Each structure stands twice: as C-alpha cells, then as structure tokens.
Image 1 (cartoon, rainbow, N blue to C red):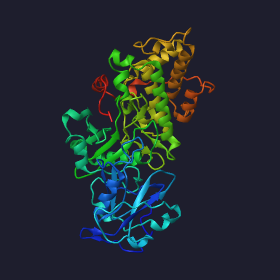
Image 2 (image 1 turned 180 degrees about the vertical axis):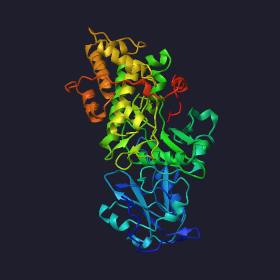
Image 3 (image 1 turned 120 degrees about the horizontal axis):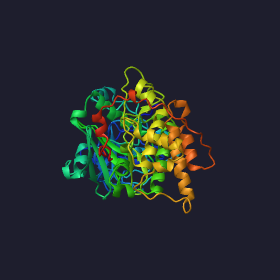
Image 4 (image 1 turned 60 degrees about the horizontal axis):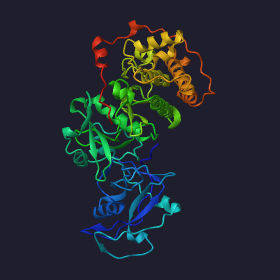
Length: 486
C-alpha cells in the first residue's frame, strides 16, 4: 500500500536557476522506481549520461533513471521525475534511481558550474538510502482533475508514462503504413526506436473512449504494472495525454495464435506438433502465474487465441488485460459487466455471471483443443461436441489437425501419447461444474510430468439452448482477428 504522507524533508535547499547550478546526483541502488504519474519519458535518449545532463539542465527535475525499455540489458531511454517522488521502495533489483541533492550534502564541494556539469560517480551506499528518500506533497487535486486518470491504488513503478510527441515520432505520426492490426476499440501500430528495436503501440479509438473504455484502459495498466512473467506480454509504457489513451507493448513478431491455427493450410503447417505443445505449455504457465504466482489472484476473463501472442521464437504470451479482474477486490456484482467471447466463456459465467478462477480454466481448455485440432469451437460448441464424441469412441487421435502429418505410434510413441494426454486435459478443463475442473497449477503439473495422474472427464451437458449468440456472431468468428497484434 502506498504512503502519501510524512516521509523525509531536505536538509539543504537545491541551488538551481539562471542557467547555473551546483546540485549533484546520488545513486540509490536496488529500488523499484517511484510512481510515474508525474514522470516523463524520452525513448530516444541513448545513454544514461545524456539522461543525467537533461535532468540537471531542468531545475524542476528531482531525479532520473534509465527507462530500460530497449531490452538486452541496455541502460537506454530516460525517465525524469518532477515535483514529487512517491512510492520508492528498496528491493532486490538492478534498477537505480539518481536523486538530485544540494552540493552541501556531499563531502567534496566542486564550486559553481555551468550546464552541463561533469558526471559525478558516487559509490552506492545502501545504508544511506533511508535519509535520501524525499517525499513531497502529493498531487491529489491535480490527479483528480485528469479525466480517466490511472487509479491511485496503482503500483506503477515499472510502467512509465511517455509523452505523445515521442509516440508520434516512433510511429511516424501514426502512419497507415505502420498499422499491424485493428479492431472495434483500437488500432495497433508498429513503432521503431532509435536503436532499431520494434515496439507495438495500441491506440484506442476516440469512439471507444467512453467511461467504460477509459476504465478498461486504466485497468489494463493497473493489472500489467504488477505482473512479470515470460508468458505474459510486457507493457513497456503508456500515454494518458489529452484525449489520447495509448499502450506501448513489446513487439510480437509472429502476431497472434488464431492467425495460424485457423489460417490457411500453409500457416497451419508452420505450427508443427512440437510448437503447438510448446505454446500450450506457455499459455498454461502464464495463466497459472496470473492465478497466484504474482501474489494476487488475477482473472483474465477473455482468454482466446486472439489474445495469445507469439514472439520470434514462438513463445506464447498472454495479452489484452483490459477486462481482467483482481479477484481479491473485484467480486462480481450487479454493476459488473459480463465479458463473453462466444465459445470460450464458462457456462456459469455466461449464464449467471459467476466469476471464479475456474472460468479461465474453461477458456484454457477450449484454446487447448482448438490449438490441437485447428477447429473453432464457436457459440454452438461444435468442437467440444465433436471432441466428446471421439473421446467416447476412443478415437481422440482423429481430433488432431489434418494439416499436419499425424505422429506414428511406431516411430513417435511419446509424441502421440503426449497429444492424447493433452486432449484429456482439455476435456477435463471444460467440465460443466467448476469444482470438477483442475486448477491451473494442477494442469501445469499434468502437462510437465507424465507421472501426474489425470482423472477421467465426464461428458458435459452442452445445452445449446443456453447459447444466446446469433448467426452474425458465428460468422464473425470465421476469420482471424487482428485486433490483438500487440
């Protein structure tokens, strides 16, 4: 929980003005960066020294840090804080914050200097960090004036805000040639940083910036700020400037899973059985982390192949957390909106709005079966009906995607056994009664260890009369969506 009152005050006033300063910076190592509501980010700053010079030249800049959004361990990009430093915490981390202090607080006085001042390297002293943390008055009134601002209970140390000018620069002013995906709520652009790294920029359409749209934007930043896992797409930054709501994500070279499993035969064959199993394992690990590995129980609520992105090594990364719920604080009530993607929503959630972690388990089961079969489930549950029929006839091997050569029992017995085991796990995950479905941690164990026992699934009711989707919705599911290519 953040503390917005009390804290430390400066022993000596800063000396900056008229183009001169004697202020210097001290490194505070091993921190989680402060709240970035009042911070600015420049993605094009190449070095930490350049970042230091910019902060020193701006008398309102109280601290700076490397943005670290270019990957590979490079200390590039620049985050600068002005007027208030809030929610700075010491953790086991390689991140450092450089705090502006008066020259009198250092042992050696260098005298007055013109901009820029030669960089000063100070040996990190963790024991002195406590007296260097500066907490000023928090901008409660300022924050309340921002329409659609990020919630104040947000831990945003790892997700900096970035100004709109920088976003326009890296996307060539939102050029149409940079569009890599779009849907009803937003357009996704490919952006290129100065160092050559690609990013994905998701810009919400103005028509989507309703009260709910702004809430979903804030929720996505809120949820993603506290999550770090190899199988979750990483939110690098966000922009909440004027009427713009923009999310900056790591770029996924191979787009989304639905493009391949529901695509042309050539696209389907590009995902061999080994890749498909790797993707299934990755999705399971990502959901298991959401359900408890992060320290909180997060329900995604809208898991589907379009929200599973693939990097250049075909690693699965779960995306689109605009509808996610922090289960500990967001219990379903009469004012909650039920988010339903036909064919993926658990029956208890679709019919009664009952939201539990087992809703994600059901969606995972459908995704698993779709990934192995190359068939859409759809609102009429056609895939599940077919899968249960083949299971009861002991012919589950016939469910596998015919675009790929089936593994032979003689030459590939282990692969064939693993595929059959996955189908059984998928059927267990789509049981009617939530308590009959395994937890995601149990599913991970069943996927990774052949020694883990798997219960025999029971055939669900499959009450098609309860499905309220129209033929129009069914037809909309017939082609891959490009809305989530972040």
